[in-house]
Image 1: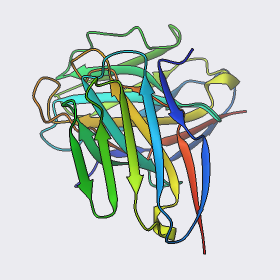
Image 2 (image 1 turned 180 degrees about the horizontal axis):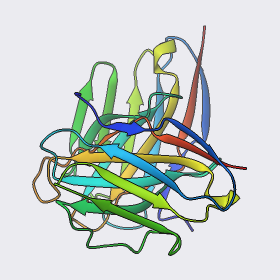
Image 3 (image 1 turned 30 degrees about the vertical axis):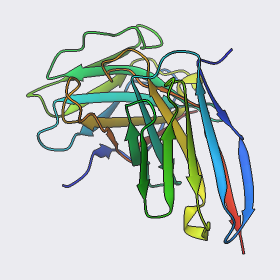
Image 4 (image 1 turned 135 degrees about the horizontal axis):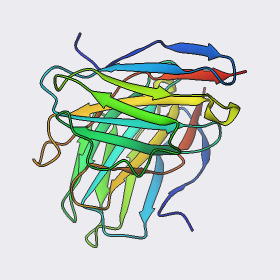
Length: 116
Length: 112
């Protein structure tokens, strides 16, 4: 597709279950970012990938959160043993490159995660 | 205090009126991004500013980055109902665009 695609768009899960959120970036974009937006709060940076590597994982809230990217394309954000405070909209973005002047990041529509 | 502050938090304007949203950083801005968010549509990229004094326009929206590169303003001329939404500024304060810090957003309502 032409834009960043995220799936599922909505996910309701029981506390303690694991969830996987998927992001398909724009074709050719080497940089990929995950953000989280909790109710009433701004966007919180989670992690970014340049290619398949994630140099900075400091934004991940806890060790229950992990992310991977394969083939320089699709990325998966996994949350293990979900807690109610994990409820948020998880946004993925991609950009051509981190290190050129053209770093406009385009966002997907997000996955709304609700932990009950 | 917040690294990036956005003001106002919310704004209600009458259709046809002009408005300005501000974004102030406590650090030097290597890049400043403006986005608009509407429910169910994700974040829509508006424009990016990098150079001090830079100004960009798209349709009725103009964004500026001040000379000291610590503040940006977004100005909408002759607002329309289609401008309604949440406007977010995102700051690159590291120089690599790898980790944007976002403001809490400005919720804009445009009344008829």
